[in-house]
Length: 506
Ligand code: AMP
Image (cartoon, rainbow, N blue to C red; front, side):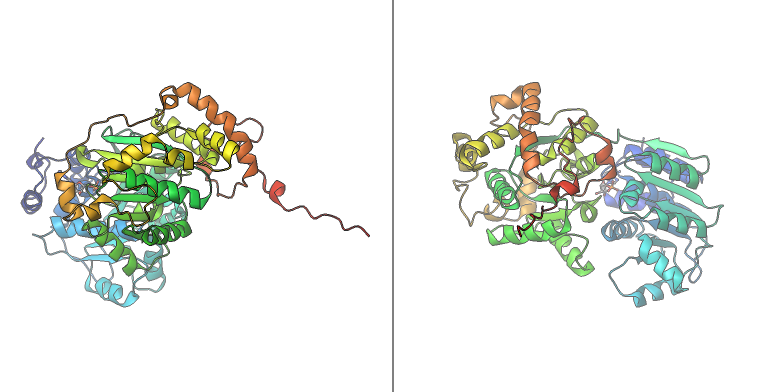
């Protein structure tokens, strides 16, 4: 179906043509006519599907009639993170070149004064994160009674970030008669409840199975010990061993690990930037822009900061930690393999991660193959020699792969990812890289025999899990899913971890 059949205005169609889009994506083809018909829409779609244009294009068409009044925005788009909000502004800039609309970005971390001035001028499109929007409202600078159309984007992420009470407050301030567009990548029961509450007779539009991962992504699990230094060393080996690494995002579960890992990578000669929620807005934007422009090859990020970011052509994703929420795995690895390109996703798995891993494999409906052995190897090596994966780093397979990456040895401290050493920019290198087929890497025979590997993993996990205190915070959904544990499974109750005070002899 061509764009011209969707009912969009001439101005919008011209902008779409300038953007170089020839055909609407499935979510656009399905959602746009309903938005133009003023229907509420429940869109179940991940980022990367063209979801943003699915609401910005018809909004631009609808906004061609009418004018904005001071402090009373005509439309409101709620986004969970500042980066996503900024990305939506970029979309309005791109598709709205033929319109004279006032678009305001209301996010935290920047001064109120400029935002106040924008709101005073009258806003056609207000794009906001919930907290800062409420701040403006409480300061009396904003009235939401003129909102004709409300977009709630990334609703499941809003839930994860604890924004739902804010969203419910905001929705109460917007007229009941508004049109509502509600997007979420997944539909857990709490999100279904909100959709029922916020939407009137919505048109449901679903473009992909929420849990599906692109077939162009080569996924591999990498066995590692639990300690930070062991994981960092394993990661460095992996990066150095990847001959075709143009750029990559490395995900950590905790913000403090993002900062620590980035510093560690830089100290080992890698070109890495950090992106996490505690950084100020300027630093976040600088890091992201440098990565997008191909000036930085590696971006170490937390889920919150990286969710939904539109970064085309990322060749690699590394999960430094197994995510607690299985959906996060899908989102993380979805940063690569976009638009039919080939991508590679490695996940470091330590003995504590068996439950989270089980939940991920259950969600995506397939086992993820191991790269170079599995966890039983870690435990075996550990019990025999007291070291974890040294043995594997020095075996024939690993050195063979390292040679492919330009003859650097795994232990070479100054090694850099190929994007930085291959001559030319990462962007240029990306353009030249042909899509890579799903070729099996040098994997151990154990990895081919999945059921056996699974059994071994469970057996070797248990003593390990008891030795290591479980410090990670467990997510709600993480608790609800995964393997049926034996006894306490890998969970160690907090009271068992308290130091025991020995009684003094009198
Ligand atoms: P989104 O899902 O909104 O994050 O969009 C993902 C990417 O798809 C963005 O880089 C858009 O510029 C791009 N895109 C959106 N619509 C189309 C289209 N109809 N054809 C090709 N690319 C598109």
